[in-house]
Length: 111
Length: 277
Image (cartoon, rainbow over all chains, first blue to last red; front, side, top):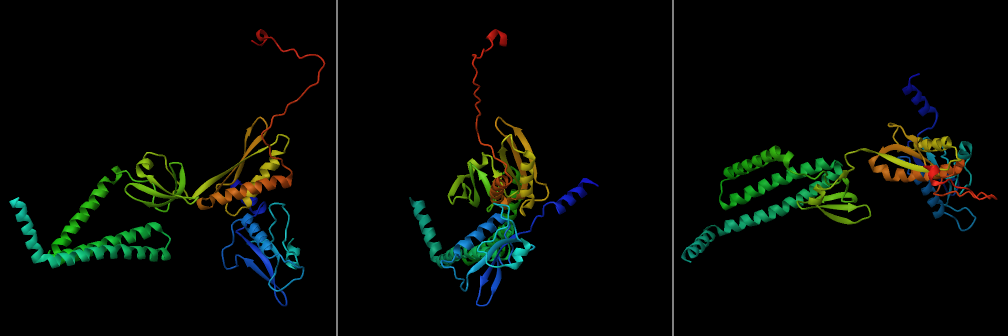
């Protein structure tokens, strides 16, 4: 196998380079949790997972509830996803992380 | 004295005959110049909404300004009484002569090695060029300062223009202790670079073992990114390498000297100087 082909195999199989990152979160409404992203799916994603995790942390800080009850408009299950929607490991701990974890079957499956 | 008095009389006669036309021509000139600047400014703003190509905007605006100026000058001189055709011919000759001089002598005219909007490093200042005049260049540094650098100094100094290179190399050097696995450290650094969307695939990111120093092994990571993303990517990579090392148990070295004390009964005999020679 030529070196160019070998490098292609390595690129494909070793480490995937995501095209971008979004912060996933779910908002509590009257009846259910609605999934949203920032930046929105129509907008270009963030090119830095560091910036995305920082945004996720700030979002969590901004929406921390003083009381334990879940009210309308609160934000849960904040984490970073890549361009394929897969959960991204938190670079600080190299492990999956979810802020304001409430219930997110998708996230658990992916994690 | 008499000749000066006659000159004044001559001017008075001219003003009496053509004063009104001269005044109107002056008004046309002043209003025209003001209008040319105002319209060109608005044209630039309008074009800026359509395209981000600064060169194209500048060229179109300048052409519009010159043509408008032509019209204003012709209108003013016609009002005074000059024939339009003669003025038009005169302006054409002047324009062509100016273009000819510029084309012929441009290689010999010292020009600034950047344009408005370029990010440059000059006179130990890093910033964006906001404007250039005949005497100085207005630079906006990244900490918000507006600096006026004399063009004379720029022409005599080394200038780094970051606009001409689309990509830039990031250099992250770290030192790890001798008892650490440098292959693991290299893998961590390479994988962090490969996984970053901003890092170019070609040239490929590489990690080198740069040196075996007194107290550490020096590793150097090199990768390429788009110029505007250089700073943030570099900062992110440094942060991620630090945490990556912590997660994998790689310890970064810090400057230190190990002193080993041997408790011996007999005094140590040092060789004599002639023995060393």
